[in-house]
Image (cartoon, rainbow, N blue to C red; front, side, top):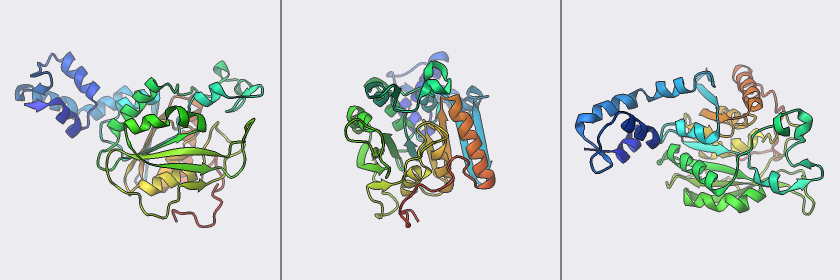
Length: 319
């Protein structure tokens, strides 16, 4: 007998995908969770073709770069839908900055919203991009998929939060991962605010229930990188923020995943750390911006939308 739980773990297939195959193929189950040897070969043949199935399913929506061993693949998709298509236990590091709706919905500044003046950009519904609806139910689905794709032996995850989303959702992360640190990103230059003006964001660092350490003990829990003004993409984050995350946790050849690709800063940081990268975004603007940026960086080592380092210290802790 072959237990479905063991098949999911050993062969890196999504449970939902396996269940659909079993149902569509009318394969009988024993004790509701076991498959007999008679039918296992059919299941194995299905699993062996999963990479072809994934690529066919996403055909026309993928940009793939492979230069000097730097493999970068991006998709245009909803974050949760994208994660569901990735094999289980296939990612070493998740480093991401979700486009939370909470801060924008709750805190208004003058006549505009915090992230840009959408209507002036001529975008549909006056928005640059579709925000991630940060209800606990939606966030639970997101974290469930993150946990499934993140490797149990090596998996580290970094999730960025603004102050509002940290209060409303930060505690939920502990239901899925072993939270190790709360990192403060000091943006150096003061931001907006009607009361105390904002100069920082947060990063929750956690492991997928493993004891793998970060690279060394030189890393502080406050990172000083300047915010980007007049950015090419709304909410664009400095490459150095992702560089710090990935350098702390990565080994050469690790796979880094960002389900909220945005301007592609996480992809540039992954390339700099000799890592493979897979990411997605639902926004046309994101795919256009990040595709051009990644291609130019791989071909010419030039970052076309962040011209200089945002670090303020002479000796950055990953050097």
